[in-house]
Length: 394
Ligand code: MLT
Image (cartoon, rainbow, N blue to C red):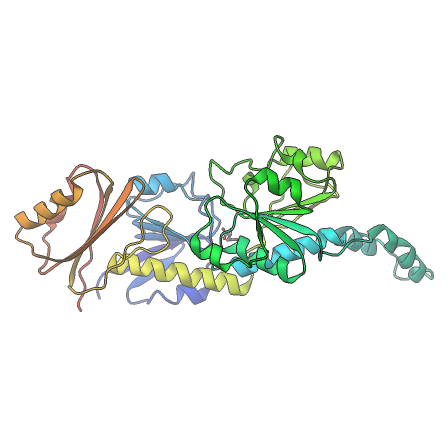
């Protein structure tokens, strides 16, 4: 049997995804010492020693802030994710968050928990007590959506269907996302405009240096008195200290989030869930299937789809002999790669090269087998980050 590829699994990943790695070609587990790739959900990999054998990391989710992406880029390894695969699950939890706040449901449930079910006056206590939890309806209120990727668009669409007004903001909205938005969604030119103009504001941006503390002391005061802030993206996107101060000053009615934190723990107007956004059977299955398929296609054919640090590159297989090269996006790399191949007497059958930022990626199909010495000569070209040989019977 040919040597199997080794996949290290750091978290619970849906079996529906893992089953797509056939056991005759893959060894999958938590005790893999020289992994070819890593499958991860939320494990923090920043402090982890990532084995030199790792050629790719696949995250069964959208965010990749638990992965040291620049470190992987420097070694020419892609980091895959599953954009959109859990978007419906997160959307549904955001809708729950709107209702939890608008109808004061956590406090109402705490009140019921505290009742004595054997008390003779239970009914009267309930009827008297409920006055404290009178809420308002979502319809007619305005929801601000900051970040109109897959999740933000689904949330905006659902809110329109619930009769809400929606104000959206995303300076980098894609053409696809723009097409998917209902025409009733109004476009805001800035985050400040959203904060000023809405009863609810929900955040759907990745955690990046540019989005850290996106809502904080400098702008939380712009929110309408009694507004509700929802954060189902990442904890660092909101400054918890600023939220605590706004809640204490009763400027903010509720902070609904998926990230418990010491600064906010125990505050009655904080509704914190334990990172449940993507925790549905359907989302876990969708994410696992999507990233496993992407990872397999990369390991076996070098194709790249949905990597956060690589360009999307796919090429149909027309030759048994494929070389995949990641390199710095600088002049004359392709010239040097094709010269090294020509000098080795290799005929290029097909080739594709794309770049994204500082990363370039090339797939080359040649007409005959590639000797290890040729691969080594490619690796020695300055700027080449990784070279993989992917021979396969057609
Ligand atoms: C995501 O980034 O999509 C979520 O964090 C996924 C998860 O909960 O694992």
